Amino acid sequence: MASTGSGQDRLGSQIAVPVASEIDREPLTGNGSRPFDCLVIGGGPAGLTAAIYLARFHLSVLVVDGGESRAGWIPVSYNHAGFPDGIGGLELLARTKAQATRYGSRHIAAEVTSLVRDGDLFVAVAGDMMLRARTVLMATGVVNRRPAMPDDMHAQALSRGLLRYCPICDGFEVTDRRVGVIGTAANGLNEAEFLRSFTADVTLISPYGLHDLDASQRRRIHNAGIKLLAGPCLAFDLRERTIAVALPNRNMEFDAVYPALGSEVRCNLAVGMGSIVSRGGCVIVVFIRRRPRQAYFGLPRWMSMRLSRLSMPYSVKAMVPPSCCGS
Image 1 (tube, rainbow, N blue to C red):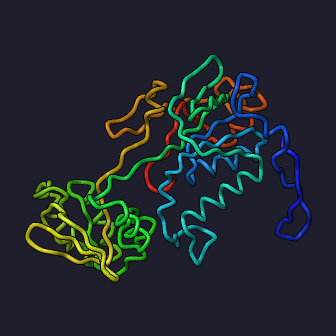
Image 2 (cartoon, rainbow, N blue to C red; image 1 turned 90 degrees about the vertical axis):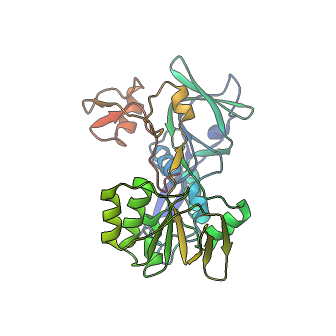
Image 3 (cartoon, rainbow, N blue to C red; image 1 turned 45 degrees about the vertical axis):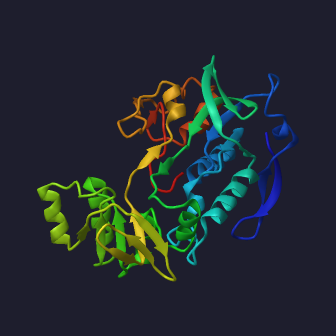
């Protein structure tokens, strides 16, 4: 059990705040190490938030972070509750990690390359470490498909807000601006239509050649006043306040570009454990009706009671967070 330190509640009174104790710092590897109650794979907002809750249930938690959270790309987020002046993605990750650590969660920088069952435990390999846990929470997220541009240009475009991936998060920032959407078919159309609610100047650019749109989709584009351009995008140029896109027949300049090219779900570990995934790579979950006091995944009663408070009346056999900014 973690020891406690002191803190203050909103009224200024002293409260006990758990901090990591010596027993929490025992070696992570070797046959003599005790298994963790939960191994969280992924150190993005979703994994770190889960770690906070689990650690506050007095469960031993280890977060293995490969350091590739998409949240780290965010220069400033203005839609996160509690930060009216905005917060950068890296700062948000650091604050959330510090909060989880405060309650006893442990964190290592590594990539889990193997996950198997060994009796009642899960065994994960991360670098030269072998980690054992009673439960695993996969917060592995997704990888955005990027437009063809050099890595340094991609990073600079993101930091300057010229390239954006989440209109739900930051569509407000492009209100009444010139916006280009790289995509076609249903994905491109849906993103362009959504962005049309923020600005009247939206252009949908095919990432290949001609657009893959049927008659009904073209009517929707016409009715929304979205401009259509054939691709592909041959080159990009970052200017003082805009991003230029070179197309076969013309050059276009935008205040921001949104790639709508889809994403790759990081589901390899789940597939290796026998999970069934959809065509897009999302883990298909199986809901199990359970009674409130029913044992949770065969765990000890004291643990199941704590974990059950994280779930709905239906629990799931497997879970991988969806796209957007949880990874």
